[in-house]
Image (tube, helix red, strand yellow):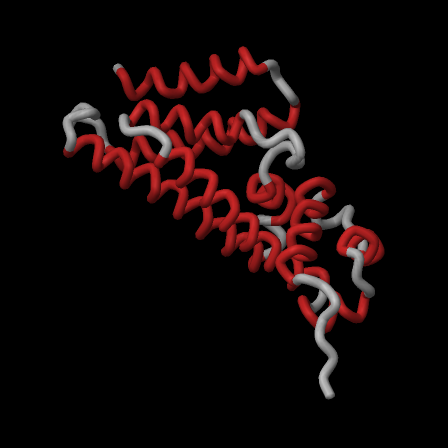
Length: 192
């Protein structure tokens, strides 16, 4: 008779995600994962595979989490500037119980160049973010909220870069006022 797992897969995957988010891939040992996830090494290997496979799963889980935050922030407003401000503020003013920064950005700086699998996943994730910005900008142009002389794709690239940079800035803990100023300056390029 097969044994049932004595743990909730999504719950322990979230624990691993937060650990990688806090410590990075290289600094996280299998023992750290055992201790944090609350399951034994064999269960980790049997359920998730090796450390690298587990990391890839947590990276994809994080992206689903981050995409949800992006969409929730966007849906909370009706105007283009309102949507963008909400999205940028969701990145700048994270849940205080979350690790600082962004697992995608952290992983890009730590692994993207040396790990082709991680690099490919991150490339896809960043491209999807940029596409979301481009879609939002194109829709705003159709509604007359964005000047027709602005290129939505070029502007989306700029916003994606600014959004990524903002997530880096949150790691060094600037003041709330400074983060708001960064957001205001970023959005000023769209208003002009």
